[in-house]
Amino acid sequence: MITVNDFQAFGHQDHGWLRACHHFSFADYHDPDRMGFGPLRVWNDDHIRAGTGFPLHPHQDMEIITYVRRGAVSHEDNLGNRGRTAAGQVQVMSAGTGIRHAEFNLEDEALDLFQIWVQPDENDHTPRWDTRAFDRDHNSRGFVTLVSGRDGREHQDTLFINQDAAFMAAIMDSGDEECIEIDHGRRAYLVPAQGTVEVNGVMVSERGSAEITAETKLSVKALEDAEVVVLDLP
Image (cartoon, helix red, strand yellow):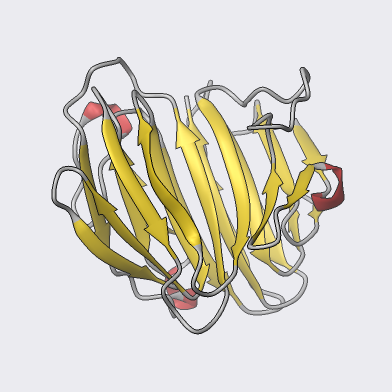
């Protein structure tokens, strides 16, 4: 089953320096029917003006994936980590027993990103942060897994999260079609970061989403040049 959500149907907030779109209830946006999807608790689509950002603040017991679509985000935390994650790259922060961090757009251009919160497999993990660069021009490789905690273990060339989930992305030319296998009993959350796609014949528009259950194979067809991300969930 595929349930499509249009971008305009999400929660939208304009703070001036930040334009935020919340796929699920978050901060001042509350919809009792949109509290998450399995262990996926937050999917925020943020547009952050140059020279602004989030000052030091705490998190606990959450796996936080940040996928940068345009610009770059600069991170620092109380563990001594500092880093810059640019478009096409991903960062992961396991909040675990507690971490305080700040994220700023120190660039001369706006920053567009997805920030995704996944509930961990259990509480009180050791907090950590990591980022990794990936080849964004990988349309000939199909979907590439960028983050994974599948089967509770680390996987080569991916960032690790403490949940049996995997985050993947693809850059697709118009007319391209890629397939994704979904294990029986699992679910997926798909978002076209750019462009419109069809998923098993169902159209999903740019920055909308598809909630996918009881499907074991996804055929993703780009109706125009597209950038697509998918979260495979238990």
